[in-house]
Image (cartoon, rainbow, N blue to C red; front, side, top):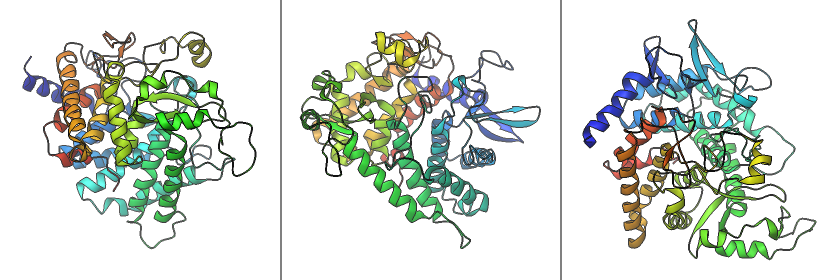
Length: 459
């Protein structure tokens, strides 16, 4: 099938099959298109997820369909939780039932865990909408400002921890099944940073009425969070060597090993993975239990939001280039590396059959993630050294061509399994919306002006 026809097919699937209308206007896209029109689909894949609509809304912004994005954001805002325990939380998903929009705040989810990332993504998308549409009236509305204040009440409330990170249970973000990602996982911290900076921008449109949380509060918190993440999450070969030689069992304020990390917790595969010039943000920091796994989305967001410096972004890109055989193989992009195996898989996932090693979120490959890496790299393309610039350009082109050759024939599968991503995921849904739109975004960014790659920029 010719490329132009594939693009047309993907656009038709999005606009004609995935998008949902409510009161005559689009309110978002379902997670996966059912095989037959009118069927309920499997589980909740026919619901509208905030997380799954991130690429959809980014694509609609690039296509200048601003009203659709505003309606999605406003609809989600109307569903923000008002109950005492979850006040300020945005729903994981929502669906129309008997003429009413019904939201899921975790009460229907597998494992009953709420998706914390949905709330953070709403603020990031709201900021992107205002920046790219030029709509300065929408954020001035009392409902929008009230929603942001409720979000900040939730995020900034006192807790039993001094660290500026957001503490969440296992399965509270895109990795929505047990995978030993509880605590302060990277993806949530990167999104928290983006949401705080986005909220700071949106609060500048607030009127003179009382507002307990200010733009200054958000910026101060974001700076503290960034310092914490750069100190404890960023690793290179040099920082790992320093970490390995730090003393343990220290007490007081001037200690070197704040989380009492033992040398035995540092895996040997890091030597080859990092090389001499690579660097990345590790998956988690917990007392005595650092998680050195590479999580693709959290690292991409760290670059997109400029949480890591330009020099660190170049180190990240070199690490990706060096480890293409792991992260891309026959389909970009592996969600995390390495997978949990054997006893670790059994104990830490609770024998989760969907998260078998090299499957689903446990080392599986998700084409929908590739556009995040694409814009992270393209934002810095002009400032990259010539050798890295050439390698990045070739890498992105090859990744797109892998998607172009395979995804239409594989019916836009949700994810891919195996060490080389050769197999369609064992439980993958077909015609997955964010696979379709992730492909459209890759095509757009590789053919559009460089400024389009700044679609999620915070500044």
